[in-house]
Length: 162
Image (cartoon, rainbow, N blue to C red):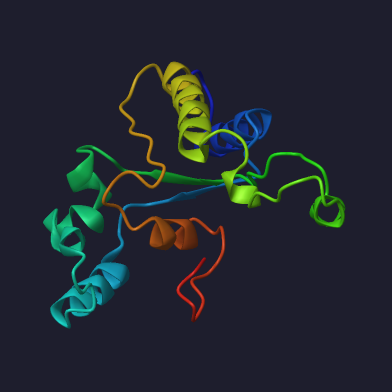
């Protein structure tokens, strides 16, 4: 690391993330033990129903270092992703326009965010002089909400959403 303290690096990563369009970035370690225990009880109770894929991958879901060996820190980033457009009430007021749900507008957020994560990871890797990373956007067996909660991006509410 080019003579930077870990606090300086964290501040720098936050600046880079903002420049790439992320609204918030949090950092956490790899211990998700409490969430692992909850997940195992949930699976043992059969709450996954026909979603057999939920029980695959063993503890990789709750142990980031098993999914990506050598992991010691996990970054969780938040981006408000809503393409600009005509205000919904104006669209609804016009009989000559159709109404498309906002989430269906714009580019696929998986691709948008993944490409920005790759750019951020490259900057971090260059700053540190190397290192491994793997960017996930709803694409890997990780406890994304648990990681985001531990990274300080929110809390898991009764409705199970962050």
